[in-house]
Length: 118
Image 1 (cartoon, one colour):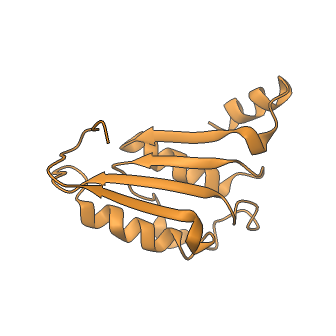
Image 2 (spheres, rainbow, N blue to C red; image 1 turned 135 degrees about the vertical axis):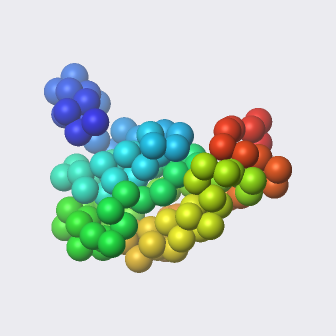
């Protein structure tokens, strides 16, 4: 993912215009990559996921380059694969890594490990 970011930058896209996003493992990868990236990115959309290697944070964050990154984290309340509790714990951990007001954690009643129109 970091190589893709570098490729986009070489093609003229400034890093502060790049948003990473993903669902489940893709969301986990987006969170970890953005928080350890050497470039200031625009934001993260993380759906039904967790922060990998969470115990390594906040120290693993690359000099706080993305301290002010906007994070939208969404999770279904009925997710049997990644329990919503893990999403909530991730949101709390993220608030210790980035500016807390930049973290939005939204839950969706009745939604399992999937997405919904909302």
